[in-house]
Length: 283
Image (cartoon, rainbow, N blue to C red):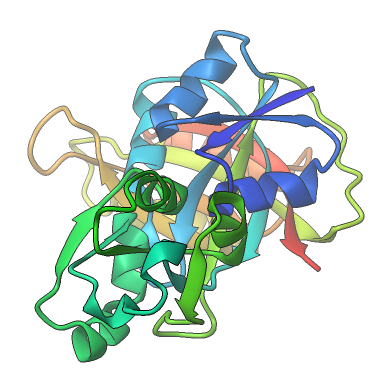
């Protein structure tokens, strides 16, 4: 089986892949849309993409691509703890405090805001496509007095030296990764713990119905279906037009969830099932 993920090697997405499918061939892609496209073009069987971070919230490009660009079911989810390290090229180990620029993914930079503000206030910060891409750039450009923010696997993969450990602002920082595939895949990793099941729906409200969102919530409430997340995203059809992504804390059944969907459609909502799937955490 081939597994596509947001690369290059040693990103947090790569960590998710290694824990869920340690024996499978992992293929890195430069961007999140590239991961989706690889599944659609049958270049890979499965794709791993980030969907939400504890501190930074949802990854909008993942949500928008999943809704507007492709039709790939969510078949699973894995949560990975996020620990950020400051790393430099070994040639600058002696004078690492003289760095002039820091590279990393925008989410990683935001996750280390307090550290950067207090320790490196005023220093130039550059965004990269991933934390691993930042480390790779530092490795390939030893002439730059720069540092990268990433995980310990990143430092090992690219031969960098960690000079400050655990620079993230909050310890309880995690990222959720969606597992996407057009096929049914067996999950049997010994590195992960099955924590439960979810069902994700996309709901578009009727444009001419007052109180529609209240009715949507009521359809789930009286059936005692627990919503663990609800988030609005623009439909891209006009200013003020939104759809809702709703996550339920159970696998789809034969009665309750289909009944709720039927009730929503009866009041004029458009409902799309994005997936009903197990979710895991790394041990």
